[in-house]
Image (tube, rainbow, N blue to C red; front, side):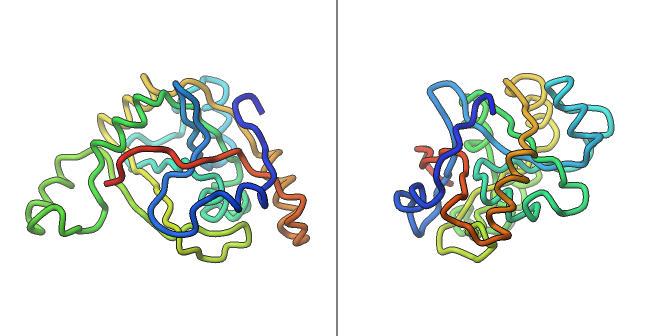
Length: 202
């Protein structure tokens, strides 16, 4: 893989926080990696053109996930229908930071004041934010919360045109690691080298 370093899962597990809201991600000074899963047609177009198009719909919200294991939970390790191909997408950090800073929670939070103010914020924002329970490789729910971000409209357009640096199909890696999970050989499992991304959470 071009911009992902596979690392021993059990070693990473020792240093990841066990609870709280955390963005776990692979990143460097200029970029951060997020994941999406699609069917073969959409994924092949994305890899060939290094952006999305073709059968990809601009009229629905697109969710990105910086946490590999959260993506694996959602896609069933690449076995769910229309999520067979896992894409690793390298983004400009400035773009990711802008996505997070402009996000509005999918459900009401008291920090918005009234529910009316929250509904107005949802209507005016092109980014949704959800903190959901993270899961271990076997799909068991954890105390730690993982982030996913939904893009539409202007933010989705900028994601596709300005912020994507590189797209890679990592389905072969996913399939290899899925076998270790299925055989419960957790000591052999490798995942991308992720650490806490230091961004003020919303």
